[in-house]
Length: 99
Image (cartoon, rainbow, N blue to C red; front, top):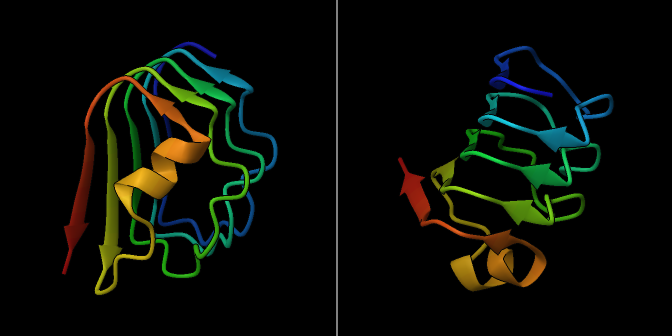
């Protein structure tokens, strides 16, 4: 898919039916997902995961992100940059935000 793909504040519980390859930014904010199963395998752009409190696993994380990854946890950081880079080839920066 070409363009940006945003799943924001929709109480989505799964990422099924997301495009396999994303040519643009991929953003998942404020949903009820527990894993990233169904997310694109390749994101040719930036990826942002923010305030998905139930996300506790890296299952389904994209294999490649050509750009930056931003992760906002709220109060608790669950994954380290090293853990994320073990499952995903990220060409840019990994940025974490809490609070």
